[in-house]
Image (cartoon, rainbow, N blue to C red):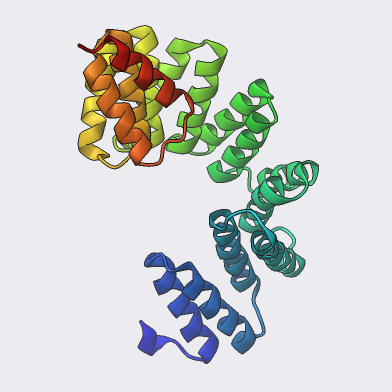
Length: 272
């Protein structure tokens, strides 16, 4: 494939793709910068570099460097959209960036523009739904996730997110149907599995939830949230030694829920 490419910009763009696949964000940024300089910058170059810089900003601890990285991402996405105003992916990415780092009202406008430009994009509808969810408008969030499912019935993100909103609103049968639909598409989709386990505690009892969490730990042995949830289930079932073991494991793996230590301390009082 590399032998078929002509020009320095194409070679650097290929290098960026390889680095992205290997999860080397700094190398992606460097390669895209070279591609922009070599090819005078195309809208997809700026979009991808903006995307990578947004991802990097999310990983940097709060501070001046994080904010400057976010500002560089915004500049790239602005340039991409200056060149191609109806670039749906760039609109969606700029909306997410603005929501996380800048102006949430302006973010809404970009989310709405993204679904207007590409109403068949489940990703764009999912982004708008997350916006409404974070703003506390569960009804509009459910509607947006539903539009995403209409666009792509196999969108596990839209199915899972709609299920979560239905769960919060108390529509447990609706939530269960959405989680099960998501897991039919992708049986290993973590968010759907975890929320399905949480739902089982309400509709089928802790024993059913425990079985699902045990299965999850076969597939996801390094996920602290699974140990956290199983520890809480053990606590309700009166299995205190198992509860303590799981919550201590979750803490060791980085779970920072302040209630964990209190539950551990209380359980230890009753372990003989």
